[in-house]
Image (cartoon, rainbow, N blue to C red; front, top):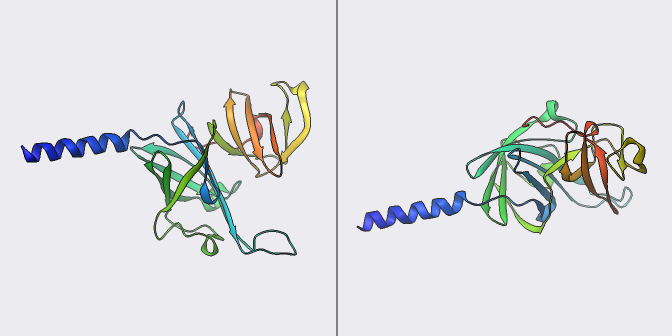
Length: 203
């Protein structure tokens, strides 16, 4: 009887663990995540730095990588790389759901610059959710200039644009257009042509 109770308890814990869903939004220490339930696809971006260069007005050391992945149970197998340099430096890893507000990332190798900021190879790094957001994907710009549009029409082009490798958060999309949010010195929103965004391997 005792063994049966223990087995039921373990099955209960397993059900709780695997029922956890990843939450799209902003996490601490420079991580943003988006989960697209329609395509069962995870995308994310990490950027953090240490030290400060007064002359350049930026961090002396930076750890930056973009990633995408697909789920295997409570873990996502991810490929990570610097935006725009997928073929040159893709590094595999995992993103695991710890609980509804916590994830952890481990990589097989360190990205350039991360040695001075945050190590991801030696042991998993945990991140806590700070702000939930309605993002379905995170993508980066692959063209020299990607303009925002007020509506899904080539005739509705705005003056605002983003340059190659800038990262956007997508709230909704169809086969041609994506409604994107860019978090820079100011928040910019609008439609961007999907042809201007990176192509996901996992789709």
